[in-house]
Image 1 (cartoon, rainbow, N blue to C red):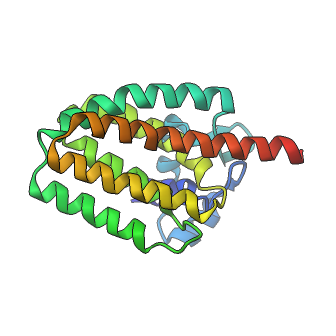
Image 2 (image 1 turned 90 degrees about the vertical axis):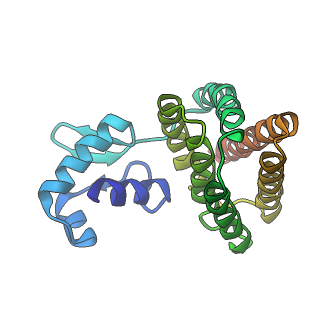
Length: 209
């Protein structure tokens, strides 16, 4: 529980990169004992979301640099298209209900985007689980966490999230119809759309630095 709660605080942007994660403060904030929190921070250090620095304690790790982000997205496209195509033939009605529920939550978010990328990660994760390729899924989950930290730090234009919502509708439709060609094309566009947003944000950072 401590691991999930701290992890979600980081992925949602509530705990920004560079933030010190003080045991006493987390204990009060989460209402969880210090022992489980300390264990969770060690586990988060192994995941790359947290850095435990001698004599300083735990801090939220910085997201990947742009060059590394681009490599991460290349790997994502390669693996995620394979997982989606495998999942397409295994999805049950229960799986579709979960995916459509997440899609409905995306549509209800305010125009500012809210926690859109958290829902996006949950949607992709739920879809890929049906591939029955758990080791590849674990790799993708880690890649998604690495980029979501960055995506949730910034507010995007309403039309950006609108495009993503339209793409998720088409992903659902192609999964239902077992149309692998449309699924692959739409999913690749959807994944790389996130990289385009990151690219724009990095340019803004450079411009104002």
